[in-house]
Amino acid sequence: MQDIDVRLRAKGIRQEDFRAICAILLSRGLLTRADGGDALRLYDVAARCEAEISEYLSYAFPVVLTNATRPPHFRLVPSRHGTVGLPDPEDDLEARREIRPAVFQALAVALLGLRMLYDDQLLEKRVDSAGRITVKLTDFVLFLNTTFGFGLPATTTDRRALFMKLKKHGAIDIRIDELGDEDAVIVIRPEILTLVLDQNIRNAQATFEQSRKPAGHVEPQPIASATIIPLERS
Image (cartoon, rainbow, N blue to C red; front, top):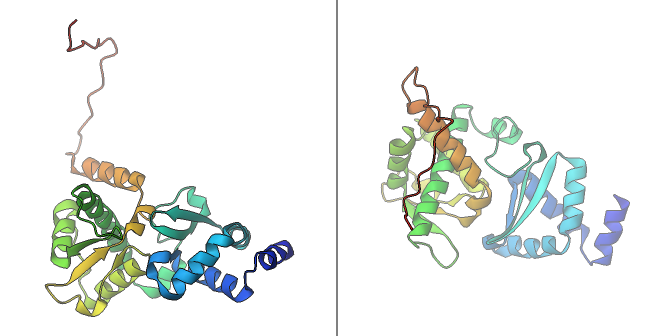
């Protein structure tokens, strides 16, 4: 640890900035340049001492620091998962204190839905210059219902807790006080690409497809001696 302090001084990094960066990453799991203000300044500082931040945090906690360039942001994830992806409620001790257990499932489904909506809109090039996508809250709720058969939490308190957690993870921007407004909108941030990975989407789709199959359904087995017949003839 003394070596890290020496390296920080050699790079002209103030201890107060280093501590602030680590505190943000540990409390929020995300430091993104897009937030502007002090976050922008601290991101630029973090970019100069990424190795020291990673070494310090991984020594003190079971975490891995990841660095994405589009958009520029750092994300902290549990190291035992091996890869970045959806936050595991069992590992998120802060979430246990902040929100009721009933919201955990809603958080995972909401993150999957947001990533799928983001991908759809991205294909249609409905993004702004910062890579963000805007959807109506009512459209998001309808998407969750039709895709997953899942709605938002029943109580206002749980709904607020859910969207506050989504904001904290850097998945969305939304005015929490406007959740009851039918014209409320959600801004899906491009940082969701490092929060919900392609593998998360594939796993979720496979799970839902399996759950829709009737009981006793058996997948047909391929015939071992089958021959592939080319469609094109010379």
